[in-house]
Image 1 (cartoon, rainbow, N blue to C red):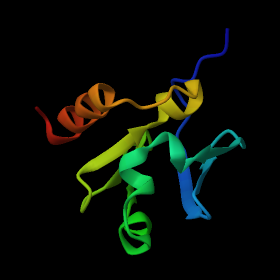
Image 2 (image 1 turned 120 degrees about the horizontal axis):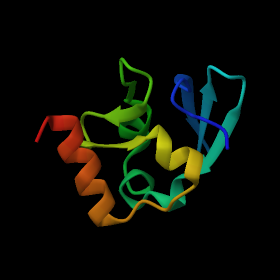
Image 3 (image 1 turned 90 degrees about the horizontal axis):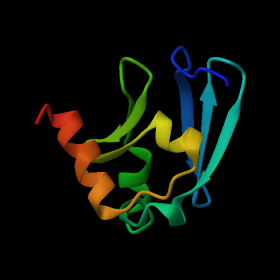
Amino acid sequence: MTSFLNTKILNAFLHKDLLTVFLNDGRIIIFPCANMKWLKQATEEQQQDFSIESDGYGIWWDELDDGIALHHLLSTTVISGEQRSLVSATHSGG
C-alpha cells in the first residue's frame, strides 16, 4: 500500500470545468468540476481565485468559503454537502 503522507499539491489550474492539480511526486490529477457543484456554479472569476494551502494538502477558494482536500482528489471521492461542511470546518479551525 502506497503512503500519501508526503504527497503535496505544488500547483493547480482550472480550465473548461476541469481542475488540474500537480503533485510533488510527479502525478497530475485532472478532476471534473461537475463533482463539486459549488465550484461549477461559481463565476469564472471566482473559480480562478483560489490558493493552495500552505501545507500543500488542499485548495481553498476564499470568496466561495469552500475547498477540496488532497485526500479527496487522491481517492476520487465525490464531495457531498456533508463532506464539504467538514472541509470548511477544518479550514476555519472549527
